[in-house]
Image 1: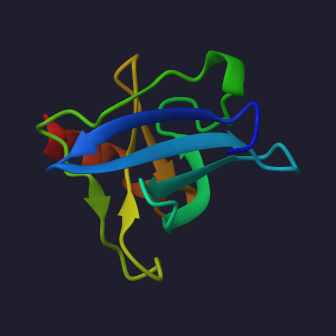
Image 2: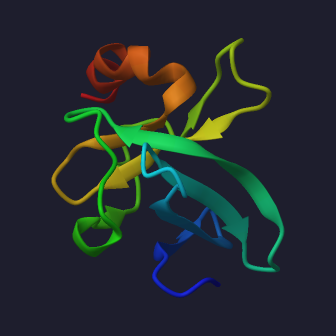
Length: 111
């Protein structure tokens, strides 16, 4: 695991995995990855928070498991595969930049 990477480890349906984020080299987005306990990368992509739509510094990012009432995966024809949702301690969500326009709808579904 690269140093400085903010990550959160938790169990999902008995399977161990972690979701972690850092800044992209350009600093224009957060790069987040979902990795299984065995090291297999399930998904990686550029993310932004729904609220500010500005990348979060790793030092202030507080990842938590997704709320029970929020679907963990986003399906969208613009994505090559299902993308996981990132959840923040402050209640905001991290979504793939490809589907950032769905923030309002996705938050409504989760309420």
